[in-house]
Figure 1 (cartoon, one colour):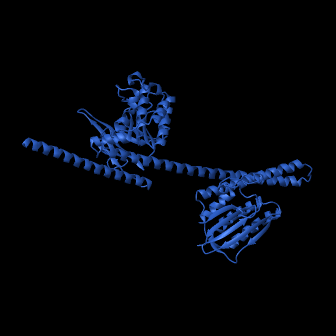
Figure 2 (cartoon, chains in turn yellow, purple):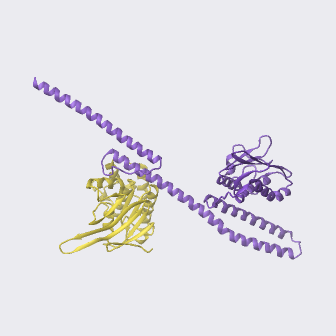
Figure 3 (tube, rainbow over the protein chains, first blue to last red):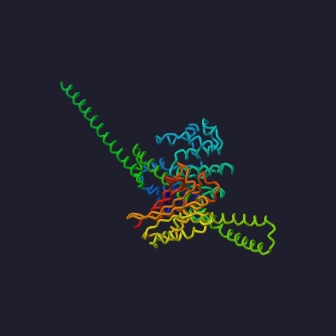
Length: 224
Length: 313
């Protein structure tokens, strides 16, 4: 079943001086349970694409459907709730809440939804991500790589239907990167999730079921 | 006086309003619970459920969205398991298929070797004879096993079509008896056969023949020298029955159902050659015919009784 569908996505930023076409007519279709990698250089539009797919940003033209639900036909509130229930997001800038500790950051989305915290899963995830010792610390006390892993744990804990990850291994060494992707794949298989990973690292992209390439706001099939 | 009336009226209003609200809410909850129950029924019926209240911040919407996820996960896992099973079947099939050619090669060269050896005339080296025999025996076992695997995986993958073109069941049975005769004679096993005049039962002569061959093969293999094997065919309006009874060791009590499993060899029979796939294949073939097979120890004497039931229409 098709989980994510995008048709004719365009994102134009217009200023008085010039127009930027971050996305220029992107269409894609992702099947349930698929692990998709989107590669591209900086500025190719991949972050914009991910934000729009996740409903965090609105396209200038085109639409996104997740499990058949059209995002643009939802109100702001409805979109927020839909996102919270169905999408896990790993941001490039982590976006952790600085005033609460790591544990609280990880379980925040669950608390917001009134869901129970799967402590066993939490243990497994933080152990694999090697942040088990840092649960009481505040985000500012962690290194960039550790913060990134906290962001990943936060996204995984919700067991969302869709996982959108923007450079989840950008600040990690190659060994840890592989472990993180392996963890994403294991969780995806276990909870039947659809995963899109945006990355500029070929080695990470190779671990996906399918690779797409973004360049100058357009999407291409990547030759592996 | 007026104030009292107003206070009483307001209090009455509040109480009535409160009660009405309470009842109304109760009804709403009932309705929601009914809808949830209906969702769960659908999941059990394997019908796809849809989110109707995707954007709402209510308990019902949360529950509904969880149920949708649960269904997705269940279906996903089932599909993954099916796919895995399929792939393993295909792998077995491919391996067995690939093994056939090298085995055929081995057989050819072995036969050539035996020919050459017998030509040299000098039969003084007994060892070489033994070596050649051992090689031949090993090679035959491998071929037997490979063929068994290929058939098994073809049956499992439903690549086999049963074509019920033959109706004369006795003809097929007699052919099987003919094929087993030599092996039975080698062990001095006698056959006691009881066949009616005519049995009309549509079946696939090749595949059913193979199934009966396997059963007879088993019977001969596990009978002692000089034993007797009974073969009885019966028919009534609903089905045709084929019974094969031997005097072998039978099955260990409690293991009757295991007899049809792949590679099951029974505790009593470790001295005999065989791989335990004959009965498994036979049962598969019978079941593709719409029939069934039973294996039991005999009532009055020691031995195994196999009963095949085939529909006659």
